[in-house]
Amino acid sequence: MDTIADFLTIIRNGVRETKSCVTAPMSSIKLEILKILKSEGFIVDYDIDNTDSIKKRLKIHLKYGPDNQSVIHEITQISKQSKRRYVKKRYIPKVMNGFGICVLSTPKGLLTGRNARLANIGGELLFQVW
Image (cartoon, rainbow, N blue to C red; front, side):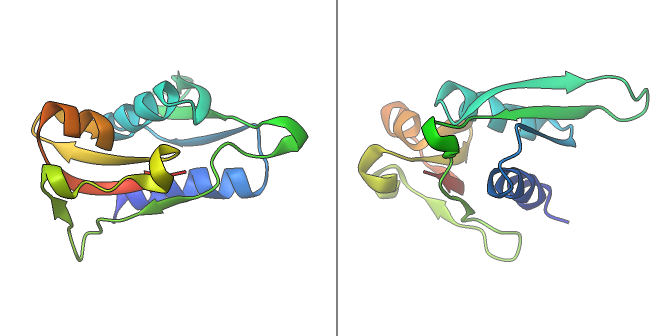
């Protein structure tokens, strides 16, 4: 199973149904993705739900603008389990001329495309948001 694809689908479905928050199973990579989405302004906040003693869950508060328009217009996965996509620093795409972000898995952890270019490293291109 591709846990990142499932996670992105949970967010995509929540945005499509204009839900205020959605929940997803907890993992360290999902937590790093949420930190990036929050710092870039695509979500309001996230919480770790510890009510279940066995499994922790992430509660994601989605962000909407005026007239109930979602801040996330599209979130698409690029690298898949069947076909990984690796890029060098100079081939990191600019999403919507800088209005969106792409997220890479690099040796220094998860980074946005802009931060990976500044750090002069490439990596696996996971997904893009705009």
